[in-house]
Amino acid sequence: MFLLKQVKNWAPFKIDALGLVTLLGAGQVDQAVGRLSRNRFIDHLPFLALNVVAGDDINQAQQGYAVYNFSDGIVTSQLAPWFTRWLAAQEFTQCSSIIHLTYDANGASFSRWDNALSMIISSVVLVSMVLFAGLTGDWWAFVNAVSLIISVLCRRYILHELSHSIDTAVGTVPEHDPARTSVKCLVQFPDGKALTLFTSRGILTKVLLPRPAPLHYRRYNLFRYVAWLGFGSHVISLGMCTLASQLATVVVLLLSTALLVFRVFAVEDRIGSKMRVQRLDGKGERESYGRAYARLKLTEMEENSLVAWNLTPQRTNVDWWNKYRAGLADSDGKQLQKFLEDVLPKGEAMAWR
Image (cartoon, rainbow, N blue to C red; front, side, top):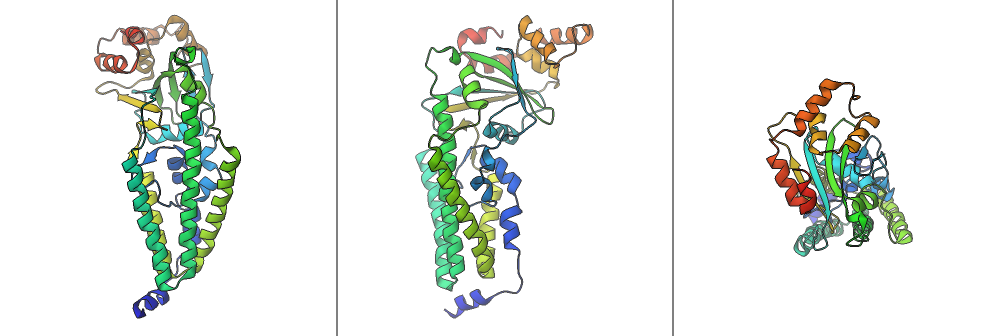
């Protein structure tokens, strides 16, 4: 007991805990949590900047992205908030990366064992913080630990609602509906990157473009309000508890946030539980937008969209268009052809030969 009392009274210096938990890493946490990817082992741990979830910042649109749908002749700059954050985290090449997004009814983003292990790790960490507060008699630290538990529970429910809305939207398209038809698109990033995207019309219009709407909106907002209360209690109690408790809290928050931001244990090939991602990065080739367009094997009408959207020079630039045609005839496309045969229906893959 004497040692615990010494720990409680130990205070050789002070730290600005309020600034740490509200400002440090807010942008990175917004990006990492908002992409709605699951993270093995750390999903139920507390993170810094809890206010970005409570304030619904993770579900706000980001500017600078655009999707060019060549199959339907449509271009839009309104992408789902989670999708732009997911794209930003993937470290795609300048313009030679290709992804295919497809519906997978039997898939699962997280196994039961992963989920159970994540909950066990979180329980050990958070219960230890509660016990440490009780043993040292630091009741502000106890309030702080309980606030973190409340924040974690609210965050998990909020993210579950957003992910579930995506799963629901993915599964609403009937088997033989025209929305199941594949479309070929190009996604342009704010920094000039270009990503080739193959998916179905339904996934594009129902999942990748609109902002996800929680199915239980009132309950979703209720958990957001409770998360604000948890965050407020966390901020106040952290500033009032002992230095040892402050340091323990900051270490837990920094470590878990670092694992989140650097995508350690992240599951990136699944979006929700019903959408699968397959990726191909072109290797050993010169990167250029012309080659990216050539990989799409556009029809003449779709090529007209390139000109209309100012993605290519006008037809009068014969030299550029000759190089583009040469790219179409490039026989060094076995890697791409194999990828398309794996991800597209047989009849559609044949069209890319």
